[in-house]
Image (cartoon, rainbow, N blue to C red; front, side, top):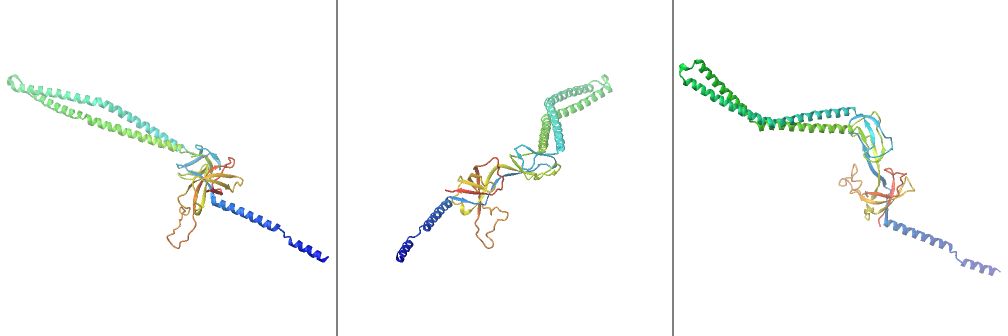
Amino acid sequence: MSDAVTTKSKNIRKKPNKTPRFLLFFLFLIVLVCGAYYYRDGLYHVSTDDAYTDGHVVTVAPNLPAYVAVVRVTDNQRVKAGDVLVELVDQEFIIARDRAVAALALAEAQLAAAKSNLAIAKTSYPAQLAAARAQRDSARANLAKADADLRRQHAVDRRATTKQQIDEASAAQRVAKATLAERETSVRIAALVPENLSVMDAQVKQLAAQVALAKADLDRAELNLSYTKILAPLDGWVTRRAVEQGNYVQPGQALMTIVTPDVWVTANFKESQLANMRRGQTVSIHLDAYPDMILTGKVDSLQMGSGARFSAFPAENATGNFVKILQRIPVKIVITGGLDPDRPLAVGLSVIPTVNIQ
């Protein structure tokens, strides 16, 4: 009986339990598959958590010093390019515009008068010269007659003339000489036709320049008046509004910021991850803000310099002790799909991009 029990127990010990070995093999297989997957994934994909959404952020500022009349927008409001954001008090600029209009009208009237005078002078000056020459010729004839009369008075017998007649002929000669001298002077003055026309033409050009200056002043006044309405430079959302009605604002003062809908991803990859990264490679993007949203994108460009190189205080490796630090290069990734219009992306959101470098 005891021999039979002993034989049975020996037979039971001889049958090994295969379950632990199977479990170990199964676990080893899982580890092998997972390791192969992650190894392959590591070969063909690179990712970083040092990434964020980026976009165009435009600061809105006035061009004029003035008081704020009306603020037309509120915080986080969607606006379109050309929408009025802020209106400034414009009475002073309206007056300046009206003064410029009046100054332009005055300059144009003066120019028109100068042009008319020039047109008249082109006819009158030659006519005056011709008249002066005719009067000179007449004075010469009168002088010749006076000379002849005086000679006759001296040539005749003294008993045939009188002292008075001789004096009158002598006086007439002197008057004729003076008249001829006056007429010759008039001819010389009237002969300056080109010079006189040149002076008047220069006046016309001067007044034309004044008209151009008045037009420029009017354009500046109208431009300043247009600046009293501050418009949205592009489509986007109003952020960081820092202006209220009644504020006195200065040129260049930041009133608000417009964030555009054009959003991309800036990912700071390690320099050791860039060996096989190329423009156009596909990217999957996970967002911390929307875990259920997975965006698609592609590599657009790599910045030509590390982030440390363009920092406010770049490293001076040529001084002191050098310690090598793995640098990061900003990579721009454009978003190609997966966006939800009801969930717009704000700039600065944390994302995890994974680039397929296969």
